[in-house]
Length: 273
Image (tube, rainbow, N blue to C red):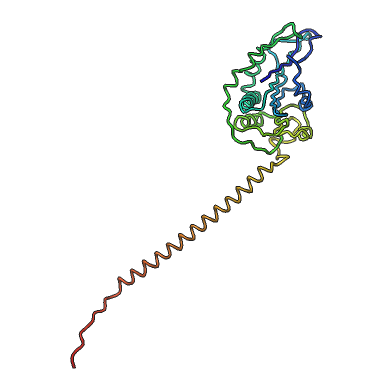
């Protein structure tokens, strides 16, 4: 797993830049077009068998630039598309989405970035390899719901999305799967094929209806309905056969009872003539 940090130094010439370099996956796939750069954002994506988690605009506690503005840190995790890496990135993304855990994540990242001579800042990458906050989240591997949908960027929706990341695998397609940002239009997120998108510009109080239904989901629903129908028919057949068997037993019992109640016919000897 490769880790990249964007930050800046104090001096005017030490502007925002990436260390150790700009992640190629960001440039190649125009990731910055999907987020509001000034707003804290989270992107989880898969491109060409490579996973990306980008968390932006995490404010530093103490570092400020030459104009007294708070310096913001952004982090990109880039790694091979494996189950281990996916679970790790889902756990970190979940922390970034939950208000009660985001501050711990921000502090861990901030502590790893200090002022230095290399473009004005230096990074302790070893400290970022295994974040303590990852241990807080239990990640499971239930199948993903492949419907694509957007929602309002609110605490409730972020919490729901965090829970979904903790419970379910990511879809297997190559796309910016998850985008959570400030001001970004619905049309931009839809055009990018985002699987789960939260933005302040989404016109709804919660989640909107999926803008793209998964054919897999539809087949599953149809198959489930057909299976339920078959099960219902089987139950009816069993009940019918049971009813017939009970009816036959009742008939036999009634017949036997009638025979027992009939008086025995005694033969009388015939008189002699």
